[in-house]
Length: 401
Image (cartoon, rainbow, N blue to C red; front, side, top):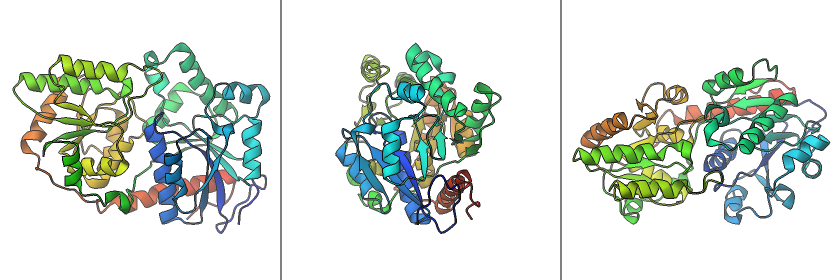
């Protein structure tokens, strides 16, 4: 039974209808996969606790939306109100409420709203959790235009001023929040997510996927969207150093090449690989199915994540799920996420990365298909319990148990 959002009371038998906004994978694959994973593990470990209601734009990719619709317990609402158009933040600020969105929330009997990258107004009459994935614009301001920087920062500030309960994904992000927005008195929760690959996405024979993409039996895997802060250029530099040392390795990269902030970034990375003579070593496979991502991750000799900024890395979580060795940029959040159980390199230290790659390539196994780790279920169950507890607490009810 759903309760009214104005009641502020929830019992353990109630199913909370929580509104989520679709995140197209071409804009942010990590955000899309976060919500897909969240919905799946909620259904698996706490069925009936939360009913996710996904609000998607009429123009959003139909195949992507269909994946959500197939998850038990998920309701999908498609409307032009949720097509991504400029001016929604300004209207929410000017009128205090995104009226069309709020009307749809009422129509669908929503109890709570999960805000991510969209502000619905300080007068929104629903308990609301605002997810701040990271503080990239404050940590790497040179990667943002002036307007993009202030649009993102203003969004965070109005969510804080509107007394949203803020959800973060790491203690590292909590430190950033306190540093960049001192004095805030909002409720703040850290909910570290964990990924649970569904069985049907592990059914493909990894050897067939490796052969399909023409990869060697030993390769590194870099499944990051091509945004500048993801730092692909450092991997090209490391491959150049290895080539000069007479060492030949392959890095398979996958992910979207779209970045509205810097449309030429992908082409510039590929041109650099060609100019350095390592185009054969740095292979972009395109946007590939998630089942193929898991297959390539499981058989790689190591995951590489050279990012300059992360809130809590989805690719690292996926590697942890299978016990894949990891080469990670030396960020506080990467050390927090792996507990020191990876190899680390400076975000500008191509030589350190190259040395790690050489050592792993020389000693790593050939075509080992890794299986899910025995600690995975406990980690995922902990994530689900923390998320359900957060929603219950924000509604004003007893903590979930």
